Length: 148
Image (cartoon, rainbow, N blue to C red; front, side, top):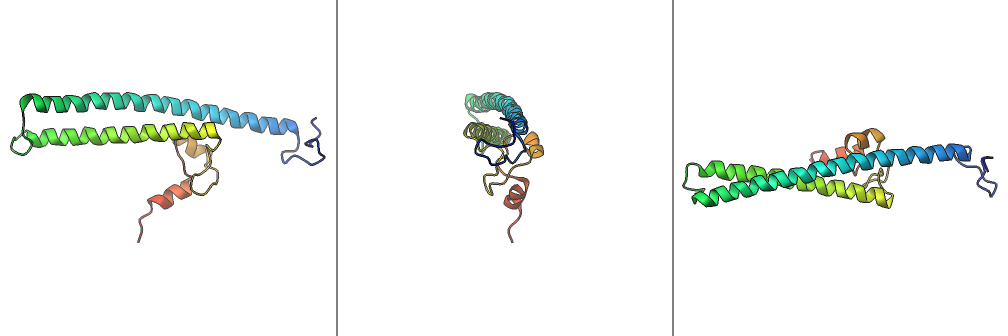
C-alpha cells in the first residue's frame, strides 16, 4: 500500500511508504556507519590499554628491580613522573573504552543519537566527529561552561 495512508486512513508524515522506507534505510546506514566507527575506536582503545598496561608494568618492574626509593634517589622523581603519566594515560584509555561501550549499547537499545541530557537529536556531524558522543553540542557546552 503506497497511497500515503497507514491502512487506517490517516496520512503518514512522510507522504508515502516509499519515502518512509527511504528514511528508515538512511537511518540504518547511519547506525551501521556509527557502529563501524565505534568498533574501530574500541579496537584502538583496547590496543592502547594493552600497550599502556605493559608500559606501566615495565616501569613498576624496573623500579622494583633496582630497589629505587622515589624520595631519596635522584632518578626517583623521573620514575614517579613516568609512572604517573602512564597511569593517567591508561585511565583515559579505559574511560574512552567505557564511552565506546556505552555508545554501542545505545545503538542496541535504540537511544543512540539522542542527547542523554535533553533528549534532542545529536547532529550527524557531531556523531561523525565523535561517534561516542552522548550529548548534543549545546548540552556539552553547558556542561563545560565555568560556573560563576
